[in-house]
Length: 173
Length: 173
DNA sequence: TATTGTTATACTCTATAACTATA
DNA sequence: TATAGTTATAGAGTATAACAATA
Image (tube, rainbow over all chains, first blue to last red; front, top):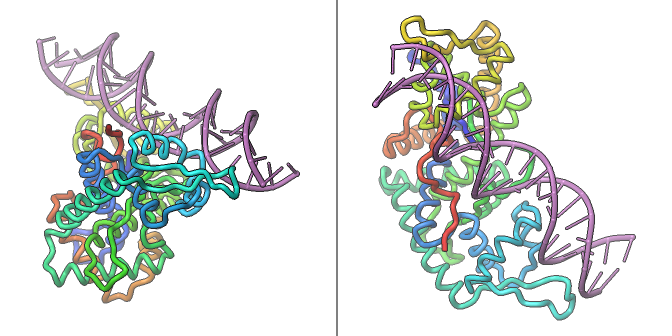
């Protein structure tokens, strides 16, 4: 992905026409990139980190169910689960009632990995929010939450999984 | 990119540990995706929209200069400029003093395209900010600007161009 | 016949490095 | 020898659809 695009701003005192959307895209890409680096430091890709978290939140789901939740194609989960299973972090348990599917669970090592990722996420949050005062952080957090809710974004699901036609770069003005 | 990764949150009343970073990534990807759709409606990819804007802001620069500004590889611009040139939107003018490079300029049609993209960007901004009141928009815009400045993000350059050591791509293990 | 998980194939995007033409 | 731009090749990531096992 390439994607420059900047907001349209006037040198004059004019109102900011396209500030929020662009700043969100810019900061979002920055935050995602920074998280990717932290995840890599502890041995995971962002997709792996996301999948581990989802399994830890709701153990026992089938790959199809998880794919549906993420808006991803079922085939996309195969390689991902394969890798985590080979590393001994995730377990595929045959469903005795319907042997066509598996129930995904974390192993003990998988839970340990989640703890490590949780610390990385906390450090990441602290670093991203660093430029703001505690009061400003609360303000920003509230505004972003309201915005996310207003657009129907599900709390915890990153759009990165979406397989819709839409490109994902910015661009602008 | 895949990338679920969600924040660590407690069901309990506990403090939000990883709210801002995740919300930024989530909303940023959403905003970028929405812009991509709007850009596609008027015939452009986000990278093309970004490049057009950069040329309109600072005409006459060489491909190398633009690549440097974007943090992109020079070779990455070739196909992009090719496409826009074939559509009659961008012009490569030989530099008479140093004939190794070109000076990039927009044609009249290119300026028309920028006007169309500007309207798409304005509509995009309005749609993204819709859930917030005017006062909240100002608050959010200010907070995001402060955050971007605090992290050294350049005012109109989207990180999507960066080609640095893969943040969210490579695997591990 | 429908569904779960899997595999095979193709396509897109981009990085890397070789190549040309100028300097 | 160094630089601007180009081209060629390869690699990662992902969508698509065909497939086997089970229902």
